[in-house]
Length: 142
Image (cartoon, rainbow, N blue to C red):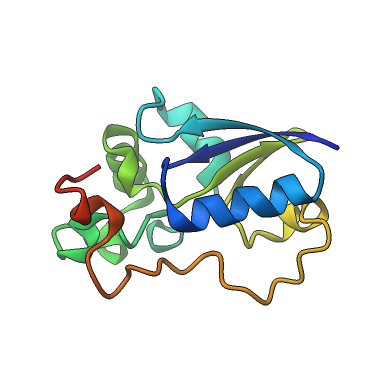
């Protein structure tokens, strides 16, 4: 059993599935609301260093879905600044475990913590990707 910090958007359908997998593997979770956490550049860099904006940004964020923000057109620095200012833009989950800062549930570094999960069920693709996101259904940007 390991203590895991799980940065999430509360109520996210896939986040709930991901947490269930980690708990079924016997881990203890400290869940933190990614939207209300006080992000700074240094903290976020631990998770996104070495990635390009298209890999580290949440494609279901309303501004990205609407085409107001196009990750492919951003520099790394611009993307990080935008995500610090508006955390809905951060691809989830962010996981801290055993000194690792991991972004995304399919990161191979997270595999040792997934217990008996066989990886066959999709717990990453937003079920609302083609429709209104959970954020849009609630009438807000967050």
